Image (tube, rainbow, N blue to C red; front, side):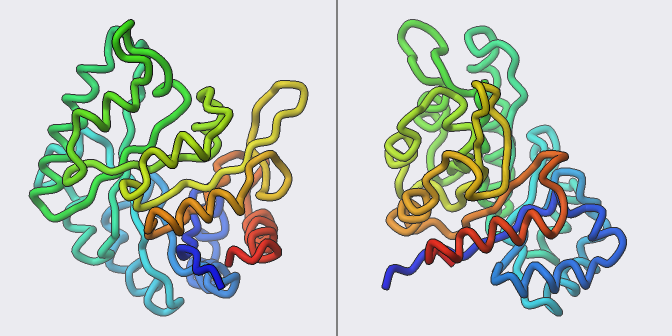
Length: 255
């Protein structure tokens, strides 16, 4: 029987439940069959010791969390102290880059510096690409993300491919695109895409066009550590949506 990577739940669409009943919400995530959580970008670093204890009680791990590239460059930033309590497997970052042809190489240097500092502190960085990261930088560089990962060595930077954004960025064969980076993607962001009349948007898993069996198979082949379920849309908030996605994955034998 095929063994797939464990599932972590991105918490960004569960903030209301976590504010009302933090322990109960984490327990519910564990009861679904998830093994970990990914913290949202607005997580308060000072809450790390309390969260670490709540995760322990729920039987969950902190798969990873988000750190801004400018914060990465500060070894004394609270994110580094939070890691001592939460023991994440990865830190995620991205660049909100406007014009690739104008800005991308400068962006790479920003990421390189932050990732180097984090690596020296024992933290593994993963880069989360978005649709605007894909596409040509110039005539000699047809794909911006290829340039990023060619210039930044795997010991300081790994991939966090997002199924929604890889597909939205123009890679219709998103599985083949991601397969090029087998062994360099410790986490895959699992995000559904539905395309009503060409208006690409998010949805619970199973209500869109992503081939989840192929995505999880890719994770298994690449020794991916975590499949992070990311809904990240106002109309996809709450435990009911999270549970619907998990149940779909279970129906496919992926959890």
